[in-house]
Image (cartoon, rainbow, N blue to C red; front, top):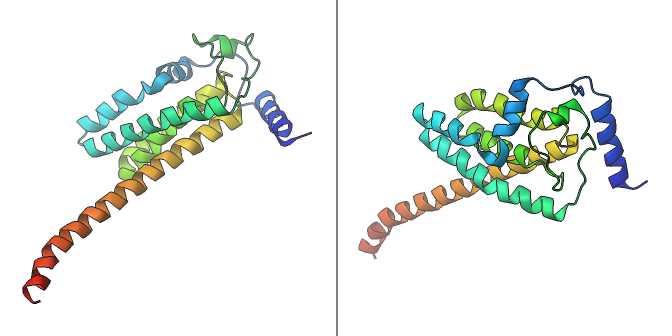
Length: 195
């Protein structure tokens, strides 16, 4: 048995043996989280609420991270061809109006949610207290409705978090360069006057 088969067996066991993932129809809130997060649309009104709360910079960073992460998630799914859980007859799966047939890995919902949530947390911990539960709800909704394997969601969360961390690192580097340039502009005339 190769590593891919072992991973699939682990995923199947976790889906079928978990009391947290029953096969009955999910609560409407879970369905709504999954449906509204499709294509990253959920994060637009969330960013709007952050902006209205005076956190425009946080909203901008979070939306940018989500916008960068989404195509990366789609690119990874093109490279990694993985079948989705066979759950078409389950009430949990039938609850969703969508019937995705693209590659299962990674969960693009999870990628986008994690990028938005991580960027929010890096910028404003207070805002993260409200955003993080929503991120987790979206991730859980993809498992609960049986459209993804657990490792698809975990992989998506990891990819999204890495994108947001990379964005923050690039932002800090750019800020450091700008500060260094301003400092050099101030110091250069001092030294040139004494040469």
